Length: 86
Image (tube, rainbow, N blue to C red; front, side, top):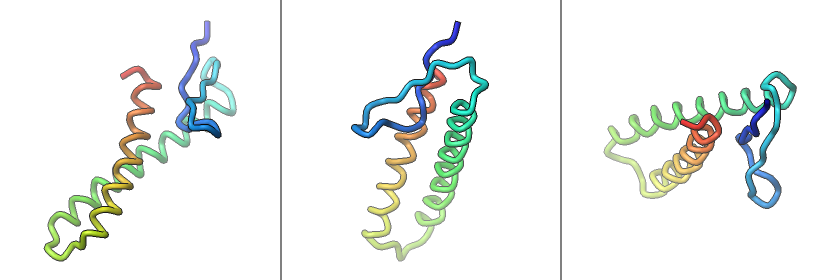
């Protein structure tokens, strides 16, 4: 029996989207690809943040921008973890 899968994107009103699937359809593969991109972006942000924190001339605006992007990435990673029930 198929169980609903939480997709890595939300609906138009920000509500969660679910897919009932056996895991081998077009939308499942698309969701897998989106999750892969999201996880890759989170990894790149971590690397970028490490480099920025080593610099002494980082502006407040740069840090605010980084924190905003990291918040978005963490939201995506938590959604993926929830989807996979980790």
